[in-house]
Image 1 (cartoon, protein in one colour):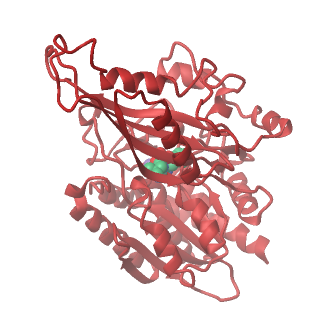
Image 2: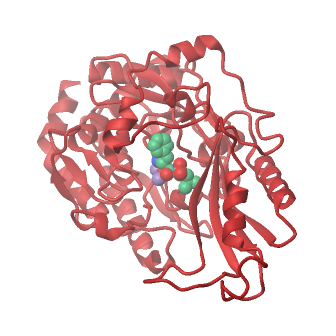
Length: 462
Ligand code: BES
Ligand code: MN
Ligand code: MN
């Protein structure tokens, strides 16, 4: 493997420069004002795949933002790795909290990244991690070490729920035929504590509109006699969890898989405790469901969070008003074997049930996703484990993550393929937040680890 590492060392600066080019385009999938930038990013990914040596590179329309596909089929007797990633990013807001402009990448050191980190929206989620695969592919092509056939599938709608991807999968089952899917869009515990993500939570995301009176009212003339939709929405939301932080929606926990005490004991060995939350986030204390550790609360247990709440007067100064409407966006993270559609239905019914007659409630579902668990005895996981052992010099710890990548469960359902979640980000990399960054160490380590994954996967598959 020394050839490979030499090639990476010699080309490291260019690998960073090329990533910077991608990071400079604001490919914000949620905001149609950026549609041209999203399209330009897809073009650049296509060009870079071609330059790295991929064949049949194309931009596939999906009905939404396009998917970039490319492949290198070297030998029908070798296994095929399907690489999934996304080139779209989250909006950078609140933009005033960035120390440097979000689409002008810059390298700075941090406590977790003494060797430097790339600061930009998408640096870690997911342009930096996706591009490691493109560069690892170049490395394997240039050093003549490509050990598997490879297909790339880089999408542009992950951050808005991958809603057009399911149809794309159904339409392209043959084209996407492979032996394993590998994804770098998750994290490790720390740079000296590698881990592999073996679980993703599912998701139900809803928007609520509560209407009281048919117009905004003077809060003196009407307040006291007319229900205030903001007061009422607040009470309704507060009632969704009890004093133990259990969710009160009837049936919500019915299908939640009970995790064995053996598995919980195994999880407790991960070097993560409450101080990992309290210190960096400057919290007074952690908070969550009674009877579970923080790590369990963000992985094996479902949650309900208000993502946004608004209504009434929020401008400068004071305006006395009893508003007509109140709104909230609510997400529930789900665990095996909860089903997104069913949870959305339970929520909607319950929310209608608890609404007083003084208001009307409208619940609109947004995107959802099914939870996913990677079995550790499958060879994709074993190959990732061996690859990380070789590149980090330590055995990775399997951990379930709290985040969601909704398409992963559909890969299994539609394509019959399991996914290996071999991501290299850190929780402290501030994905979705201001000052998102990705360690230069992590970027290079990823490029080193991926060829090892191909090598071990081909060996184990033989
Ligand atoms: N890459 C993240 C998910 C992630 C991050 C999983 C870190 C595990 C560890 C992905 O881009 C993401 O943000 N997913 C969204 C869901 C989507 C439907 C918007 C999420 O988890 O909120
Ligand atoms: Mn991502
Ligand atoms: Mn994301």
